[in-house]
Image 1 (cartoon, rainbow, N blue to C red):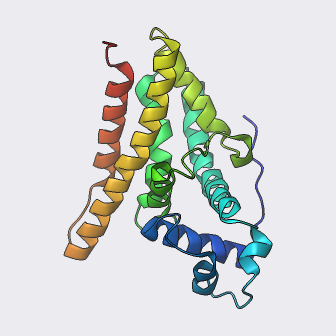
Image 2 (image 1 turned 120 degrees about the horizontal axis):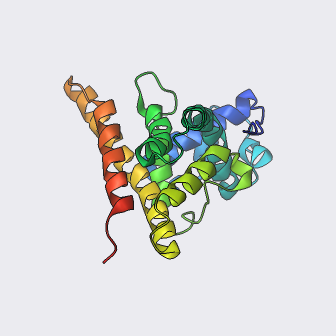
Length: 216
C-alpha cells in the first residue's frame, strides 16, 4: 500500500494548527476569529496565519490532513493485518479498522484529544460539512480502501443504500466518539474512570448492525 505524502510542519505552523483545532473544537468553526487563533498560539506576527494557510477553509483542511496522516498509519497497519490474514471480508474487522484509530486519539496522553470534537464541528457545520475525508489531498489511502471492502461486504444491498450507510456510519463514528470524549472529561473532573475500549467496541457493534440491517 503506498505511503501517504507527509508535509513537514514548522514550529509556528504546528502551533497555529494545534491552537485552531482546540478553539474550533470548543467554540465551533465560525465561533473564533483568525486573529484570536493567532494570538492564542503565541505568534507575534499578526499575519502568521494568513502567511501559512491563507484562509479559514485552508486552515481547517490543513488540520484534517495533519491529523489524518497520523491516524492513517494505524489504520493501514490494521488493514494490512486483515489482508495478510485474508479477512478483507470480515465486516467487523473492517469497521474496527475504521473506528479504532480515530478512537485512539482520545487515549490518555494523546495530543490529539481535541480532534474528534473538531471533526464533529465539521460534520455539524453547513459551511464545511462537504469536506471529503477520503479526498487525495488528505492522503487517507486506507480509509478509502476500508470503505470499498465494507461496500463489498454488503454488496447484496442496493448501491445507493450501500453508499448511504457507509456515509452515515462514518458520521456515527465521529458523533459517538465525541460523546465518549465528553464522558472522559466528566470522569476526569469527577475522579472516575471512563472505559474507552468498551465505548469503541460498542460503536463498532452499532455500525455493524446499521450496515447489515434489512432494507424496508
